[in-house]
Image 1: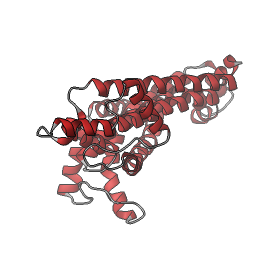
Image 2: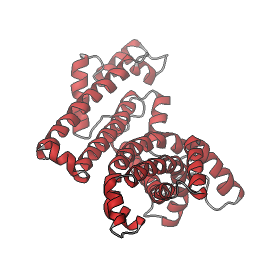
Image 3: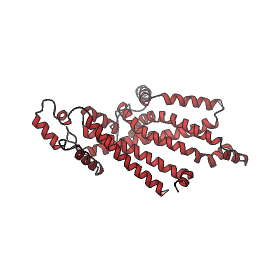
Length: 316
């Protein structure tokens, strides 16, 4: 198992290196000179050259890349071209907001999807199971931003139960924080819960058809008891895979939801930086998202080894 973990750690580091090259290279092939954009079209060539020298844009690309990677490792991605504001503190402030949103959405999705998925599998030959399966398919087809707009129109505009957007720090106003977190988290969780419920249903159905579960039931265990004792562990392997992929999807989906609900998270920072052509900020935010996705996949791979003893046996 230790050897397998070391191998996957090596794959993670190699993936991070390749991803950093792609992010840096993609930003460099975009048209336009960042220094010219920062100073405006009326800036003199001397001023543009001075700014390029100040930010190291006149140095070889390899040197720029290594300096950028060094800054990321030291948690110092530099300053913005226009405002000269440090990028690191901005990301640190915004990522807290995004993490609250993503974790709340994932928690809601799991709490709803697991029992619903198990219910759909156990009752798949009954009307209620078929109806819930159909509703989950509808949920898969609804985009998160559309769900967000519908929730705003109903619960914020008509019923006035919660604010339509904005953000407050939880330590300052816990009630206001939960009110502003509710609708965006539900918007993200709806689609993820529908997708996850269908995977849970499929995984549990596969387990229900296994011989060892029939044997457990033949020994006198009730279906739910047999499933709880012998089935859930095996059904968890594909579900964990989907959870990892969904967490990565939530990070990307939060970019749009933050815009819909006017939440100052990482997605809003990314979109604002794109609009202002703040190249260094865009690079740093994209790299943070890439690192998060790769680390999530690494954690999922590690969980495989913990959950499934067959993989540990294969690693020896």
